[in-house]
Image (cartoon, rainbow, N blue to C red; front, side, top):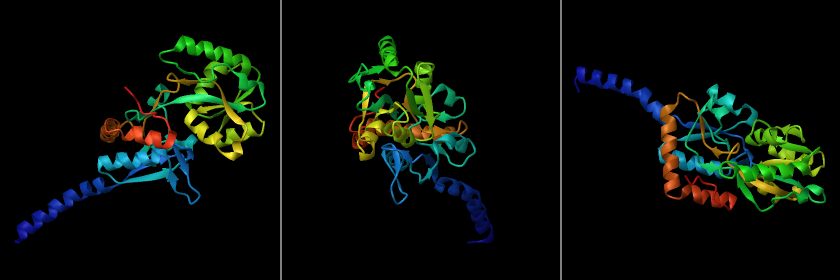
Length: 279
């Protein structure tokens, strides 16, 4: 190799080096690690759950390495905008308010929320048990059922995780009727429910079902109707608005996971029901 050829090769390698580093840089995804079975932390500190499996599958399809970062819920969006990580995969609903600050991938899950109360209280008799009503397609019926449930909840204390669609829902339908108490985590409001410090909790039914099966939450049970759509919406991966190329990659990977049934399979594995988007 002559000097000119060697110099050209060296310059080309230098030009390509940053590109190569960019391609091998892992995609950093933040998750709470405290929202079982969506995401949770095992005793040894390892993260596990539906979204952990999903992150692995999507990044494999995208041909990128990934890194999971545990991040408290109340700081998860500020951490994204501050570039502590590249995305959020944490049961985060796509809402107009959040879209003012960040972007989202295509949805990968549909949310349904419900109320849990303690056995031996009058709240176990709330109407609508066994129903799931859509706030999008069945709004009049849903609002009528909410009004009936509100009569039981008048003067009671309802616990919700703060800065969630559950808190938005209770503010809209129960503010001024019941006292609303916000918590940092789902586990905290469940503990207060069992201890008798609050009367009810409202949360995603897959998360509550997981919690109600644990011995420490014995006596807690669902009551009243379940609600989907509306404030609860669909979940997507939170991304910075400027990361258009990364969003396109996630969108394509989610579409492929929907098409080949992977999202349905992971839903059934972790929730025993299919929560993947249908359209």
